[in-house]
Amino acid sequence: MILEKGRVCLKLAGREAGKYCVVVEPLDESFVMITGPKSVTHVRRRKCNVVQLEPTTEILEIGSGEDSEVEAAWKSSGLLKKFYIELPKPKTKPAKKE
Image (spheres, rainbow, N blue to C red):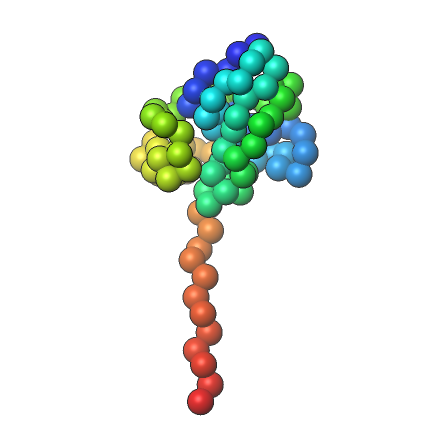
């Protein structure tokens, strides 16, 4: 089973089980390179066995597969709302006491 570039998948195993990721590059018939990216779905870029992925019907249009490009594709696609993915809120530093 070969998953094409840009395919959105659900991770089934490991510490990131239950989270969505995007196939960045097919490596061979058993492995693909995936990313969330971490700033969107909390899945870091890694090599993953295709047995641990459940492909969805959605495909993101990504070029080179850089995390910033994948993040922009997630935001422009409307899939964040469809899959109920909430982006992390930016951290603010507490005010210094004087």
